[in-house]
Length: 115
Image (cartoon, rainbow, N blue to C red; front, side):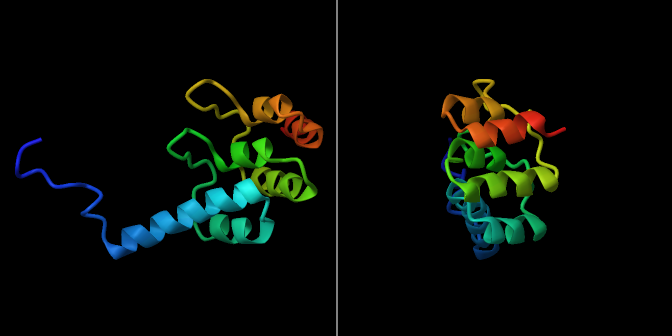
């Protein structure tokens, strides 16, 4: 970097910060199985197949943490809104593989049976 190069993080304005906060919230709602706020954010324009810095999609996080009914409902919501169940992270792991690996049978069955 030369002396004229600016820090890209420092150049984020308030609007960008607000958008990033909404995207982070969507990932947290997917992790927590919070269906209503997740639906509101997706319906407001958060891309359904957006990936975080680890390569996880909203569907992957819902599947990975899918031990309770709320997460199954979050998976249903994301699939109904068009989430791609076959998207993989950098290691080639899909939402179905995550659910199976975590022993989340209901989530795995739902993902396996969805078109």
